[in-house]
Image (tube, rainbow, N blue to C red; front, side, top):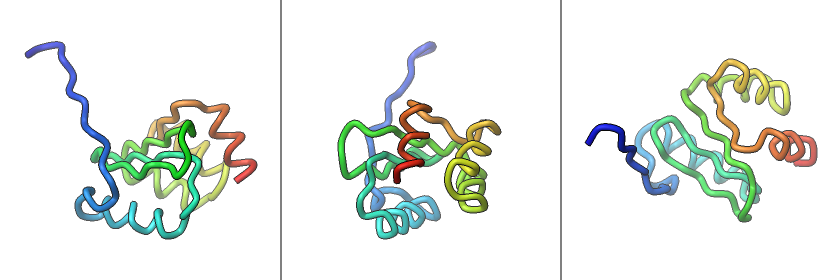
Amino acid sequence: MAGTTSVRPPTTPQQGGGASGRLLERLERALPERPFDVELWDGAVLPGTTRGGPRFTARSPAAVRHVLRAPGQLGIGRAYVSGELALDDLDAVMELVRDF
């Protein structure tokens, strides 16, 4: 039907396939306490360990490369400005990165 959008149910790292599933599994091990959600380009989601935190949506693997090459606000800022990373609440993300 034209004009309708489908909503993908959230997935767990184990439901993500291939490289994205492995990436989320590694993130889960590296960040056992996460006050944020991570969604990858294929719809796989790693939920935060607390509710109400911001969501990082990586639109492509390039977003992950930006963050890994320059951790913290710089990498997130580069990924965001390039359009590779979507943030549902920029202010909350910057506060989170500063405090995390």
